[in-house]
Length: 262
Image (tube, rainbow, N blue to C red; front, side, top):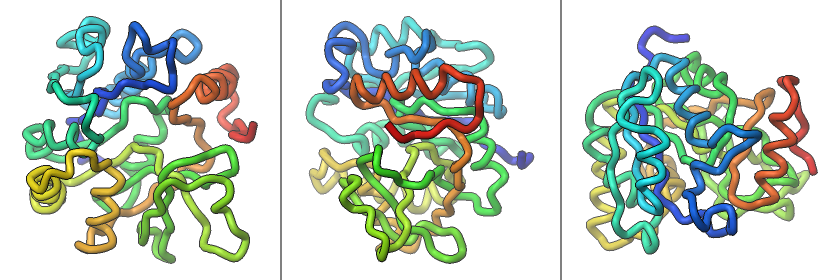
C-alpha cells in the first residue's frame, strides 16, 4: 500500500432505499445487515484497516439511526455527519456537494453507502499508479446500472448509464461496472470535483448522480480517472431484496472467489 493513502473518507448514505422495503421501513439502507453486519459498519471497518482516521457521512433518511449506530467515534475513526434535508428529491451529486468541506480537506476516498465489499478493494486503489482511481469489475449479466469503458492504458474513457445484460455485446468494447468506491487527490477535488459540483447544483440540477458528474469530467474536462480492476474480489451493490440475498450467499463463504452469476 502506498504511504500517502488518504486519511479521510466521505460516505453517501442519505437515500431512502425504497427497493429494499420493508427492510428499510424503519431503518436506512446502509444499516441493512449482510449476514449480521450492517453495510455501513463493513465500510467503516475496511476504511479503518487501510489507515483512514476521519469519515464524513452524508445522512438523510432516518439519520438518527445512523448516528446512533456509528456514533462520533467508530473504533478508531472520527465520524462527522452532514445532513441532507431534501434527500427525498435530490440525487447523489447533491449529497456529495453537501460534503464539499470534507472534499476540500485533502486526499479522500468516496464511497456509496450501499456497497458491501472486501477490504482489498481499498488497497487496490492505493497500489494503483494514478492518484485518482475508481474500483471497477467486469460487467456481467447479473448486473445493472452505470458502466465504464477502459482505454488501453487503463483509464476510464467513457461512462454508459443504465446498462443491463442486454447491453453486453460480443462485438462491443468490454464493459466494467463501477463499484462506487473511489480515491481522489486533493488537487483533483479542489480544482475539478468541487467546482463542477458547484456548477451542477448552482444550475439547479439537484437530481444529478455522482456517475453523471464523473462522466462529464472524464469525457468533457479531461479528468484522468484510472481503473483499479477488482475482478477477484467479492463485492455487491445492494439495492433490492434480491441483491441482499446474493450478497449474503457471496459473503457466507471464506472463499475469495465467488461467482456473481445468479
